[in-house]
Length: 146
Image (cartoon, rainbow, N blue to C red; front, side, top):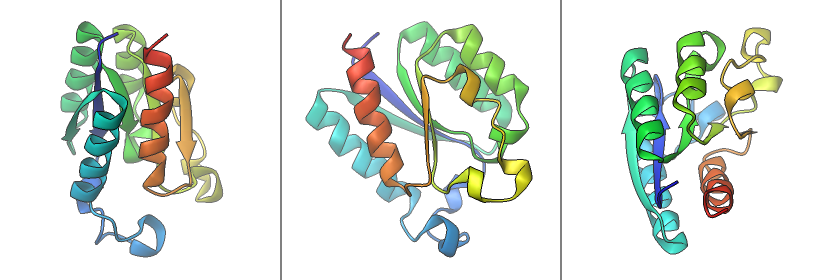
């Protein structure tokens, strides 16, 4: 593992701060990214960020992270519940991933209760708002330094 962490965000997360603020809050993705970069620097990690609404681009980033030994904080958004391709990318790339969801997916619609990503992630944080990203960075830092 390197001293690099990728914050990877899936579909619709570019709308953070305006999309369903009663569920996702008013913090923007730019705010989340800046907070992640600050915490990463405090912990001695270089943090990069990427968001895409396109599944294939997310697969490419996961494979790249695996090749480069980069840890990943991953909010797959709605792809959590539908994408075997993302699950397989994580497993195949053998990258260390902590899955994050801003809302508690288990307290929402039934179709959101299952995530294909969880089975191949190191862990999953959900329901703690955007603070979950920072908790995921801390968890990755512990596991990457081992």
